[in-house]
Figure (cartoon, rainbow, N blue to C red):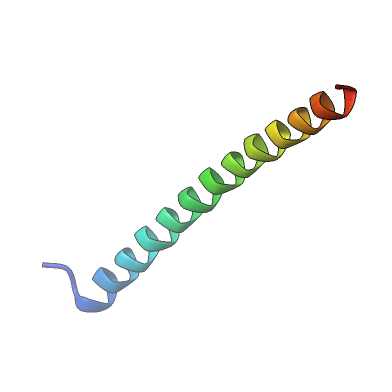
Length: 47
C-alpha cells in the first residue's frame, strides 16, 4: 500500500496530465475550427 500523501500526489499528477491533454486537444480543435471559418469567409467574400 502507498502512503496517503504519495497516493494523493499521484492522483493530482494524473489529474494535471489529463487537464493538459484536454487543453491541448481543445487548442488543436480550435485551430482547425478557426482555419475552417477563415476558409469559408474567404470563399464567401470571393463569391
